[in-house]
Amino acid sequence: MQNNQRTYRSEFFKELDKNFPLFVMALPGVILLIAFSYLPLFGLIIAFKDVHYDVGILKSPWVGFKNFEFLFKTPDAFVITRNTLLYNFAFIVFGNLAAIATAIALSEMRARFMAKFYQSVMFLPYFLSWVVVAYMAFAFLSVDLGILNTLVLPKLGIEPIAWYVEPKPWPVIIILANLWKYTGYNAVIYLAAITGIDPEYYEAALIDGATKWQQIRHITFPLLSPLVVVLVLLGIGRIFYADFGLFYQLPMNSGALYDVTNVIDTYVYRTLMGMNDIGMASAASFYQSIMGFILVLTSNLIVRRLDPEKALF
Amino acid sequence: MHSKSRFLQISLPAEIILHVVFWIITLLCLLPLWAVIAISLSNDEAMRQVGYRLIPVKFSTKSYEFVLSQGIAVARAYGITIFVTLVGTLLCVAVVSMYAYVLFRKDFKYRKFFTFFGFFTMLINAGLVPWYIVCVNVLHLKNTIFALILPYVMNMWYVLIFRTYLSMSLPDSIIESAKIDGAGEFTIFFRIVVPLVKPGLATIALFAAIMYWNDWWLPFMLIENEELYNLQYLMYRVQQKIQYLAEIASKLAMSPSIPPDIPAESARMAMAVFGIGPIILAYPFFQRYFVKGLTIGAIKG
Image 1: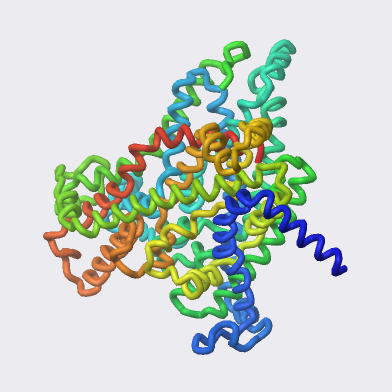
Image 2: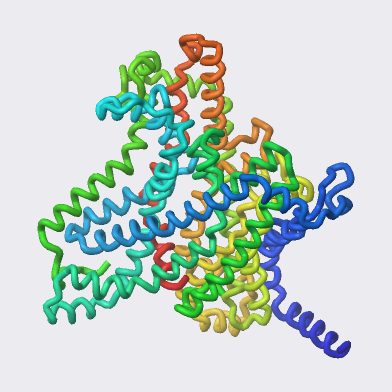
């Protein structure tokens, strides 16, 4: 045993000596990973402690699952879990459908120049921060001056809507905003896959007299489906994490909308910064990490079964 | 993109319908941007009578004069954003490319270890609370310029993208032959590898530059000192403050919700235009590289 350990160690030093520059090259990355990813992992214990700032985290007393008990007794726990899961589910379904449809349409379009133009325009929203998008949404949704309330709704004979206090339209607004921002980006991924399809398939289909629609159904769709499955599974692996900017900036942190806009990420932020309740915040944070970890492992396992090339590990 | 001319093409009516649909989508993508510009160029008082419009109400550049007269805050935020974007992008490209290169070297025995060391952080994320405590209490980043740079420098996704790029564009034999010629590792990396993978480096640089330029999250979490606000965060604060003013005023039931000498509504949007500005100008160029980067990612995840 001891002998073994010694050989391992000497092997390491031999390698260190031989490839010293490669270790040096990896060092900055290693340090940053330790600082921002590994050190916080130790902080997961906070969820099991009753943190007293005066004695520090390590000396604060253990409380077992008390923080979790408190968290899951609140109505918030259900609301944030439901919102996070349902919104992400909607993003996965609608996002992929929109991106696939866009990619197929762009790839089939005869006017290549126009296809490129549409692609560029649809990519634009990806480059804007959520802060800017929130300004843009405000131009339409502002209660007293917004374009919808002063220009559009009166023409349709609908009463003005107090957008930032009325929760009902928000699920739609949030899903649309997500589609608006990311469809152009996601379509490019599918477009790359379509471009990679061997043209011979289409030639063969053409000889057999397949119509365009049949070609799309029987060649493009099936050949895209592995990529669809992989992207969907990767989406599921991240289903416990939400796009903070979308859920915080777009509704302008309006309290009246929390029921439909609060997700785990915004809840953790508000509980930590607003209410200063570190126990609840870290319990929610821990819950998110563990569920996220399980889902990443499971979905990666499935991805690897289906297409080892696309698996993360 | 391969030419489709040899194959059956979609019918003319289908093509026309597609163009109509995509023109609608194009308008939907551009309309919000146009609305912000139109509002920023409106006369504030006139606009407050009728509401925001898609054509500037009584064209006026007063809002821009106002924002510029607030000079120092805006200029400082611009300076912070530019500095952070330049330094952050440079560091990110250096750290990511070196780490990816180490993972790419198949003859390096500890390659698997470093791969897992990075991968593990993609699997489990400690979440906001521990991250915040480490940043504030261990690394003492609060209210420092480093808070706006360091947390984003190392990014395992970029490492994976760049490693894929390396394995697609660098034959192992180049490194072997350089070694035989007696070149040291750093010489090989900087003199041989880097010049050969410039497009890959540019892709990572663009991803990083966008990330830094658009960031409001790091100041949101870690900056309280107004002198360190970046552009996006300043925009966020302006949006909040104007709302706050309007709320107070309406509670007191005073009719003009904001003192008349501040063109608040149009100035708010002018602020957004300042924030969007450079990104919009650079975006057609960025987009080309992004598409290339995404294409690499799609070929091999």
